[in-house]
Amino acid sequence: MSRQSLKVLFLLAGAVLFLSSIALAKKNKTITIFSDSVLPSGQALKAGEYQVDVNEASKQVTFKQDDKVVATAGCKIVEKPVKNPCSQARFGQKDNKQELQELRFGGETRSILIIGGGS
Image 1 (tube, one colour):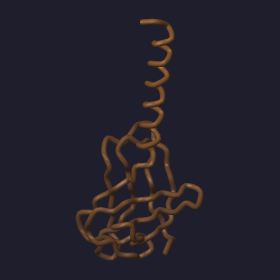
Image 2 (cartoon, rainbow, N blue to C red; image 1 turned 45 degrees about the vertical axis):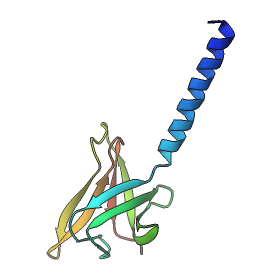
Image 3 (tube, rainbow, N blue to C red; image 1 turned 120 degrees about the vertical axis):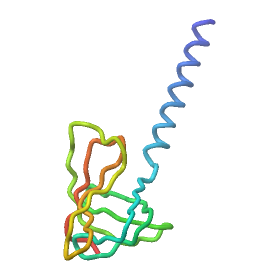
Image 4 (spheres, rainbow, N blue to C red; image 1 turned 180 degrees about the vertical axis):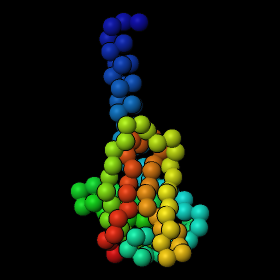
């Protein structure tokens, strides 16, 4: 193979990797809630799968189903030293109900703590 062919091959491989990373970065995060629960603000979340948008600038997390906003809440982002092995939700008890307290997404090194606020 000539030098020119190798350069073109490496350039194409780099472009494919770059475009793949962009496509993966825009993938919606999803979380499955297995039983009815509430947010710290008192909003109800029915059992089901939710698309989750985390806005770090406004410190808000939005829960959507079928592109419809179901609930929003305030959040605090905590960086961890290791990646989360899978996506999971952590709950506590509040007034005899399950309260969603934390979200972790597989492959990320952060935890999303759910706090009061939102609508």
